[in-house]
Image (tube, rainbow, N blue to C red):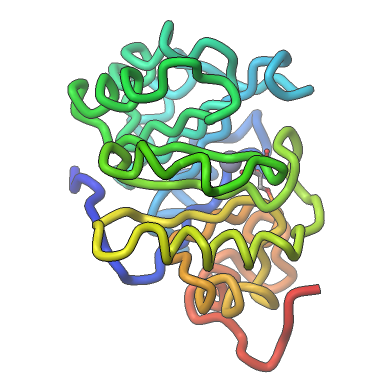
Length: 229
Ligand code: DX5
Ligand code: ZN
């Protein structure tokens, strides 16, 4: 199974939050056929965000249905208590929220010690400048472009400015920039031009009018004719 690594190529990570939860195994097979790069797994605890999804046992069961990297987005309080369980279940990238973690330096290093890539996510209202002192530790920054908790929300346009500022702060460091929430073929190019290269998309892939493969291709290529809003 190939491990994810730093790349400047555009990658698409469909979020299975928008899949039929009774058929997640099939959804993973479909994503592979549709040429997805990663599988984005949204873990919600009903406290940090007002929604509840899946945890390590389900992720472990899903692992057999896909050899794509599992990009596990933990929208949970006290992530330090369960990161080892998520790694053991098959997570390749583990992302925790800045707003949910008191000892960020410790938890990010722990994720890396466990052998996963360490991601750090920010809610829309959290300034990107707060990451300054952990940039030497993270492998990926996940910028939320909606308030986390649900799929199908509208992209917050100020996110583009945040991505640009993050890109400048990162400089020459090899840190992936991922954007999550309201990502569509129509705004993919603007997001990429701002500096992000990992695009998470739930409803744009699973509710695509054409096909999942077509949606993923369009997200990867972007559509220069269209704009953000
Ligand atoms: C929201 C999740 C997202 C969500 C994206 O809290 O983190 O990953 O599934 O869904 P869309 O692409 O529909 O906004
Ligand atoms: Zn997510």
